[in-house]
Picture 1 (cartoon, rainbow, N blue to C red):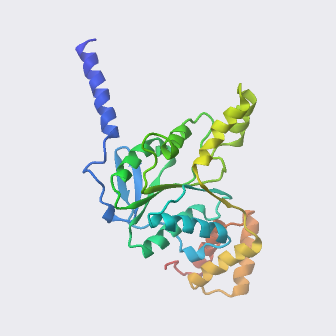
Picture 2 (picture 1 turned 90 degrees about the vertical axis):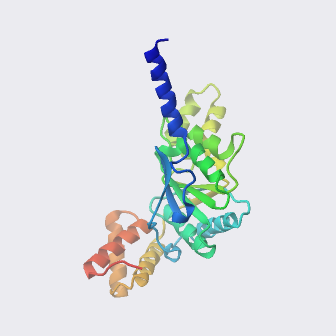
Picture 3 (picture 1 turned 45 degrees about the vertical axis):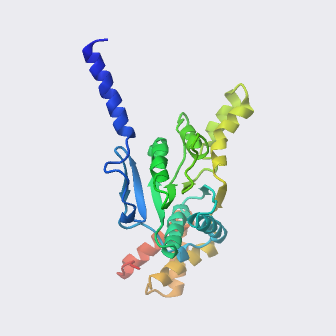
Length: 287
């Protein structure tokens, strides 16, 4: 091996070690915020000055799932056993909003010791490094949150998530739970699962390998499309909260027309309608 090859190899090793190193400056300043965004390269927790969230009282039509997630999160914040949670189902029905609102509601009652850390889908393979940082900060409790988590055909990074959540020698840190939202119940596309079923030597084992990721979540919370009454309740709740100056009958008629033109009803569509109403009225949406 030439000297030039040796130097090239050492450079690659040094670069790899740098990527695996803890964030610059040692332990993150957990007092900087109650919410952080995880960046894998260079590895660091970036404080979030203002979380984009809605008040828990404004989330309508999801009473059961709301209560289950709050109960699980409350136990975790108290240092009691709690489950990883998968919030799956219809688009725009408040999955990520519920995670953020629950964190804020419980944290406000528990003195800011509960931290929300968002990890992006493309950084999932760096989750073990984040878990090491969390394990080294036992004085805080961490909800690691991945929004819109799913895996496409040929993507094997789901295996890293499986191992991180439930496997390995150390296992999941006692001061961490993992919450994820997804439109897919098993996080993998149906055609990917069916393809495994039709082509594998042992179809049953192949399918189990694909769907077992969702088994790492002890709490499954399903979100479904809302009825018109639930949609109107969402709209009216927003209008009251922001004190919009519009007659109730005009608000309802406009909401029905709005959802008809969108071809769907959801919390997201209700919020979009409220933004349109507030803009036309010249009112700001401020708490």
